[in-house]
Length: 284
Image (cartoon, rainbow, N blue to C red; front, side, top):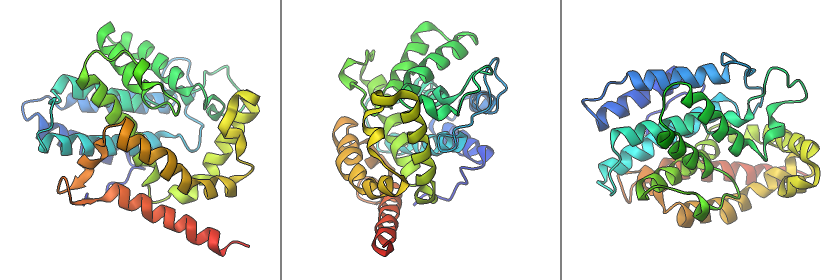
């Protein structure tokens, strides 16, 4: 079981990342962790150029921190299991940046005063990859490293064609799959996931108003209750096949001890699904 970390507190998640970094790479300079989290805080708080603070209420900075915490735990579990290919320090740096930037596509420019960033739900993955490219290129990152980060971010798209992503090697692919796994599990395992479903529905509804017929599946939810009713099937028919097949069962590295110990993320999700079931059973 993992110790409790308050994902509403960026410093708490940063400290976990720093400790993990030093356990994996004892000779590393942890200032990279500080810098990466500082950049992410700046982006989401409106301190970067022409961008406003994040105003999407579900895909906020805490959402990013939930995924980040899950990712560093998964990577440490994988490291302790001596899985191949090994994640070197440089690649760890890149995937950390990728998850910290993976939802920057919800940010709006200062002259964008219509609605919230939730209207970019359908395009946020591409927008995030572009934001990361622009931000990191201005800070001296190589074109090769930026392309790797963009590839990893691309894995988080709901309908991502994973076979079309031009990964350079198996390790880059593994890290992209680890990021996407953490993005799914980090949010669904959150203690307040059930309470946040109405907020997620509001984001979907805004995306439907913005994109109309292109919104596809998002338009199928008539209200927040219907989204909640469909959440167990979303887990069973989308998330589980994704993490078991497409993402190579990397979530198993969250089991403590590996491989047959308790997977606290899956357990928390199952608890949330049971809460939804109980609430639906009580509803008229």
